[in-house]
Length: 173
Image (cartoon, rainbow, N blue to C red; front, top):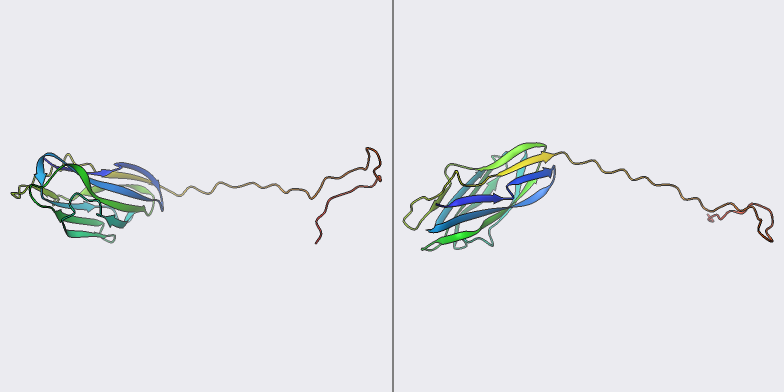
């Protein structure tokens, strides 16, 4: 069987944070020639900034590579030559931005699949790892306390030869 995974799987982030998620495939004993990975997300809490497939193990043909921040959909379809990909490897890097506070996940649509050269679907949906998010508000800036620095230190003129009058260092305007 073949599984997909999103990494990191558990994410504690703040509003306006942007993080990359690695979408990976694992098929240790059977070659995969085609994938269809459809992901769903809450567009009120998350948005996709970009999808990078440049390091994908499915670099031969990309049939679909898109996202829709209105409907909360990511659609990826790709293929490679037989005997297919065997092992663990990257499919894409998906950059996500947190929009508002809440808890949500990126999940796989039931129409996702991983095909062998004979078009047998070996995708194991229950073994595929989703990405979960807890989004907190932006922490307020830490206040900075500044103390005024005096222009000088008063002198009473003692200590051998002072004039006896107060002296201050002042800046000239």
